[in-house]
Amino acid sequence: MDSLIYPDWPQPKTVMACSTTRIGSDSLPPYDSFNLGLHVGDQTRLVEQNRSSLMKIAQLPTQPYWLNQVHGTHIIDLANEKNGNRQADAAYSSERGQVCVVMTADCLPVLLCNQQGTEIAAVHAGWRGLCDGILEKAIKQFKSPGSSIMAWLGPAISAEKFEVGSEVSNCLDQQNYVVT
Image (cartoon, rainbow, N blue to C red):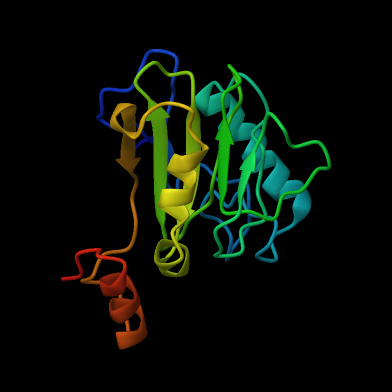
């Protein structure tokens, strides 16, 4: 089995995209599922080892910019980020070699890029962020026209495994998302 999932989409040659699986962790139970998050109680040293493993396995060109995700709509433009702010649920970049990442468990990871591969974004799309327009805000970061932006929807929890309340379906319905 593989520790990475590679999307089947027509991404430009300059864009590399993947999603991790639970395989390949240095962490100990209950975090022994390739944990990359410092926010869940795992040992910092082990999370750093997992992150280092990810860099090697995925052959990343640079260190990823890890976000402190808050289920909101703030997006960091990595080219302009100078103060080390990491409170965000999406990262955007137009710099070659920059690695945008988001962490998800049951939320939806959305990877965006333009057809030329000169702009990329990684979006942590939970229901609150979707309701508040995080995808629309991420697309507005792009200088390219919307018609040239491609998206890959990564693995997320399914309706079979997760029941939502009326507040979620009502909110998504108001945003004109299809809720089934």
